Length: 356
Image 1 (cartoon, one colour):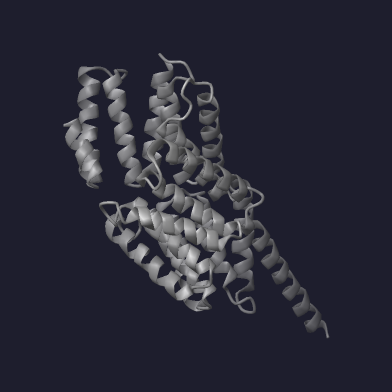
Image 2: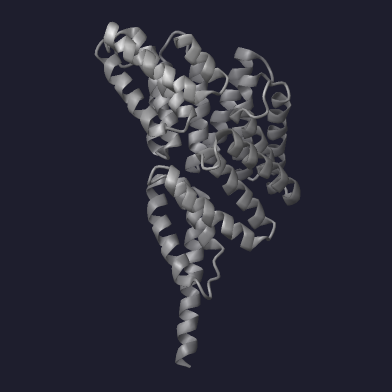
């Protein structure tokens, strides 16, 4: 039954995989006990499937339970505990708890440096995931350094342009846009697409990540028509594969709205940002920064002569929420402050005119 569950997971039938892993976990707990190694391994597999289904809170709870169980018999720096901690950090990032994820990823990386063989596939993945967490936080310089480190390690372990590098190239491409290197970003995205061509399925979420990074790079180069076409395809395929309200599909919708904004289609972009903001409120954790990022982009596009107070309220709420959630160097902070200052200036000018 465990192997059937693993097969369902591999082929993308995550609902079937979840149900089978739940059944196996129940049987293993009854017949072997909740602390037995096979019971715990199956719980880890179940958490992984839940993560793929977007059920991140449930996955985080299981990973925390596993860590508690393992710590009763194993030292803190045992590889089995470090592996689960890295998986927990990955889930926390998906929940929007970027700073917690950063802390755990760095703890795992530091602990593993003292091991006899510090460069293992999953430890490189930890570096990769830490790099993407730093990207989400807005620490783009550190993100680039970590992702380039992960790419170099993957090339040593697996060879050049191996499928293991696809996601890392995509993440590096996104990071380079914010590093002010759009041409280099496009090259990284094209490397990811080159690897994608050799994979089995163009609908796999990792390969769709390559499509996303390609669209974002094209947009940064001012190729808005091409970028919109690519990102709409990504949005459609993610929606069909995962459901249109899945967090990844909503992320793709946010990306399309960004392109529409940059192409001067402000009204269409504003409507899409608003719809994404409201949809994200329903599916993401309450304090997830991505909710506020969509809200902020909507507020930026409001007509300040007629919707000034609405824009101010949204931006002030976002300013408070994102101040603790993101790195202080994240560019959204400066943009919010600048727009709030513009609103204040408009307000003063209006008051002065009314007194004349």
